[in-house]
Image: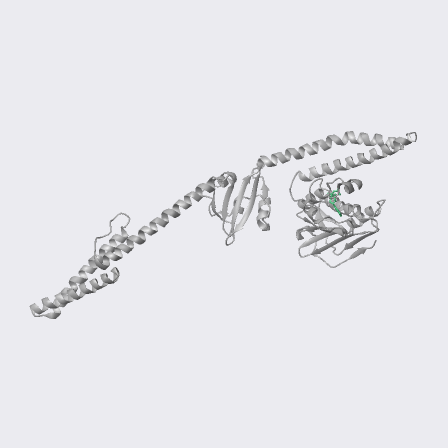
Length: 442
Ligand code: ADP
């Protein structure tokens, strides 16, 4: 028989024995009912006493020993003791695990902040407290966007595209930079990772300054050399044997000038990552101008079309937008044979404004496309040099678009042609999209 069943038989036996004893005593005194009632009252008193001891011990179980009772009461107490021990064991393990977790996250070289779906701070490690100047108790439960008010961060948080980190400068005037990246997890919760990128940013600034200064210093001597070469090239007394080399020197000097001009422009664009404001730009007029520029080239694709499908104007920095679009159109003209064609298309929809420059030129192998906007990246260096390319055009385009909150999309099929599309957000447009307007033929 199982011990538990045995114990229950024992308990029932005890009740029966009480009843029999009560009846026996009642028979002796000639009153069965009174004897039974007295015996049951004694039993009930014993049960109540056990209940009282059990309840008292449950309340004081952390420091009092369990009562020494036998039978079913003893078994109940033993079970409670077992449950209590198991709970204490799991609690200790949990606390240990939490401590380890806290120690390891505290030792992380990066800051970590846990935010709930309302963007309120749930927890942060020591590094986050140091970098973001968070106070351990006062800032818990506060919204992160109330504590970190840098516009770049607020825009980043609102955008909901957290694939790239955002860099902020929390203390104006000081050279401190923080990189912030959000990683969503669970049910709308966010993990905010913070790291100090001041050193990288300083090195980047040194590199930028060096390029800008070197380009600047090279410009003056090059202007002198170009000037003399031009004079020399036009001199009728020039030895005919030297005419070829001088012409080549002039071409190379022109290339160097264009590289330096592009380097200086890139340095200027890189100075700040800030989003530029600007004024409405008449895209139709700009494209018409760019079309004329292509047609004015000595060699150009025979067909250059402009399709303007929206009267919406683009809000941006006119010289920058001009430079970006003209780089794209210039590339289309450079990398398309004379029998090919180019099309510039401007349209708007719910997603914003789009400018696409398509050509039926040489195209680009797909493995090169992700790297096209890198400085000096050329698919075919020989062809680029032959066309006077600096290798910086698309890097300029990328920076200009970044500064306008826009992005560049490149589609190309080798041997068939390419399409470079600039996607501008709706807030860059002056008015809601309307239907198609002009088409300029070749
Ligand atoms: P580059 O001054 O050499 O044209 P870019 O930065 O403007 O430099 O372009 C980078 C490279 O991308 C070019 O060297 C060229 O190989 C390729 N490329 C750009 N636009 C086109 C195009 N429309 N068709 C084919 N290749 C292109």
